[in-house]
Length: 247
Image (cartoon, rainbow, N blue to C red; front, side, top):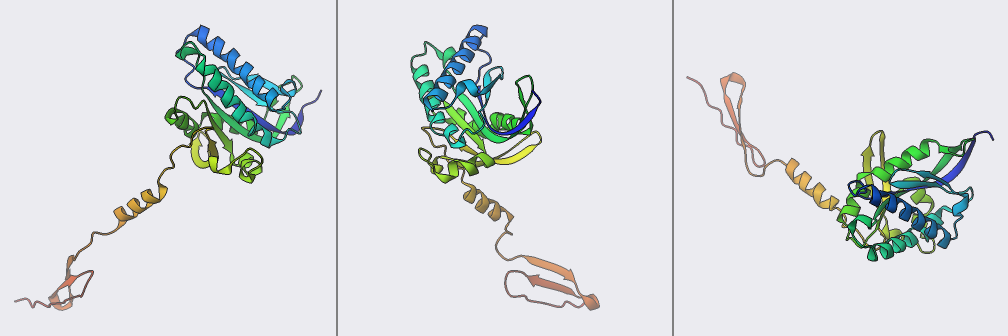
């Protein structure tokens, strides 16, 4: 089979703070995440067997089959995964086996190689989304009962969440910007079951504007004038000029 270029939706998930738990927990949690993600796909009516699945060490990248409706990867897939993770964590014997994940969604033309792998620029963008600070920060700030922080590309948002398709509330997504390596872009953050506090951008702009303003009140200038005089001028009000003759 020759390499083929096809438009595909791509998903990546990564376990939060997976390092430092030891090899036994790492292997266990990888297997658990794969099983829960598979169940979420099946519950969402998505063909898990037709997906290309690639290991990310402490996560997984999934390339959906051609023709997959992208909105279905937002709903019902993300809420299903969040519910499965909450149930798992509630019954987990300890912190080492509790799983919270960052997730990323993107879509574009990818290369399906003869050996069954996937390559292309959309996967680079997906990797940056998965590792971006807004998703990391959101998961850190969220209550421990919130197991998923999803960051989707502007392209994916434009074709799914913004339309408010069944089960998707656009108000639960908010725009964030980030720069990571060569990518500077806007994306859309979603944390099922929790709404992060919005940054007070307007207040920040006002404060910056106040800092740029000149100090209020009168100020005085003393300037050399023609014919060897001195001009005394008061700004921000009436100007009074007095000529002082020398000698």
